[in-house]
Length: 195
Length: 195
DNA sequence: CTTATAACATACTAATTAGTATGTTTATGC
DNA sequence: GCATAAACATACTAATTAGTATGTTATAAG
Image (cartoon, rainbow over all chains, first blue to last red; front, side):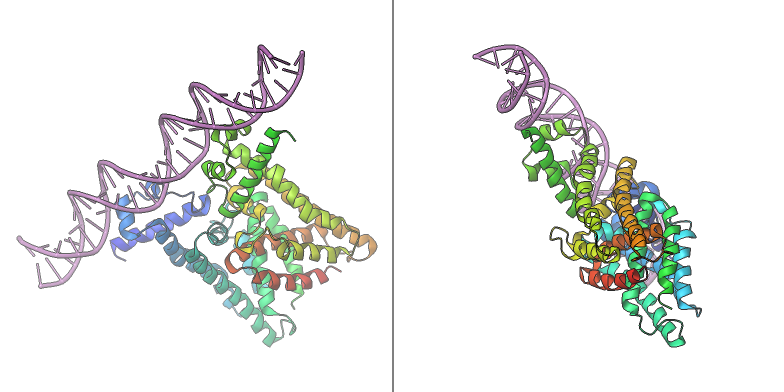
């Protein structure tokens, strides 16, 4: 990776971390410059506006991160219902970067920016749909092996599961990670309904 | 209500509407003044800071609104599982003020402000807990009448249901109200698990 | 080595922000 | 009706915002 590409990547990564904790609009360019030690000239050389940077952050940081932690685990060949539960448990309780207080970076972005910026919205829809499709496909495969009941509407179930995740991330911001555990217990009951 | 009290109430109401659509931090005091026709002197006579107004808005507008639309319906004497479903259906699809694009005012506030302001966080916890308790109590009553299975952990179920609501409100911001209907279908399946 | 461009650096601007200082008006108890 | 405080109005400030104008330095091809 060229030095310039490294600079660009570093801006995106540090911006991601700041935005995760502070929100997109509350994170100023000056704030990003201060923590990256990059100058304003360099920033606007790599990105033509703050929103241009934000969009790049979604596509180049958020999306790959989501894919690695939420989609990849579902590609394993185990019992689908169990894989979904473990994926949820891991992402809620085992990823040190993600703190209950700050929620989920993707959910945060949807909440703050989807109504305000249609480019952001579309990029975030792509991200969400990718996960939802992976869950639905995982359940669909389970139907073939008989591990998921045939009358389960996998699309609806995937929507319901993704909604639950977004909601418990929101709740965790107010109540802390204890509610994650409560949620996971009841998720287990719901998932049993599918098999 | 005295004229002064009316002014105060009007500021809170219009601020609530602006904040619902734009977010708390993105809604400037000048913006509120422009839409209320109130002057800066009047604003700072009634509230000692923007955050003071925000907290009053949570307690005096958000909280009563939440209580009326989410708690009151659960006090009816019908089948608890059905009451919960109808409450959810009504608040998602039948309240004209709430638009999918802008989500839920309370969920929005939690998402944006819970990590940033502990007074806000506590006020919002009170609001959330009130609803969650009402759902749990509703289910608990159902146990007595035999309409809810005895082995249901009503606390866990209430947490799961509230999380689902918050999440589908988030998802609706990106995908529109279609996903509300998908969610409601699967919620029905989940709720059947409880009876 | 030269030269051109990529990659960065510095200093500025105009708009917006929450909040204050200092007024004037309006209502209300006596 | 009058005094007095409540209720509001206007003009300001200092800080912060995204973005620009105009530089300088590093890099890599010829």
